Image (tube, rainbow, N blue to C red; front, side, top):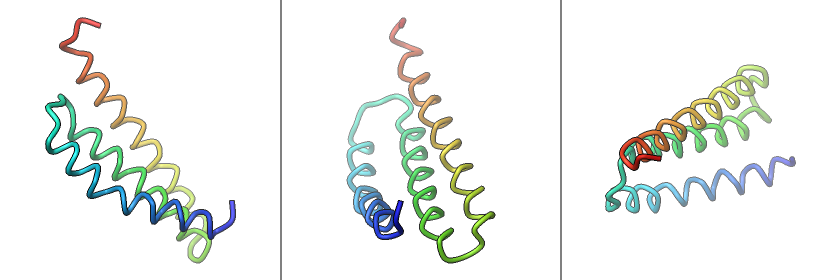
Length: 88
């Protein structure tokens, strides 16, 4: 993907951060902190994606993919927390 596309995605994630924060804060959702950390992890992944085009490619590429992994783990933990009490 071109860097301009990656920058647009990063800006979109940054713009969505306060929205997600407010929605999760008001939600009566078990594990909402896990979902917030997942969003932050994916945001950091986007920041590292943009940074890798300009500085320390290998390190930023590793951090990008590590943050994706962290985001997936936090999402899984949030889903487990939600389904834990529902008998699913």
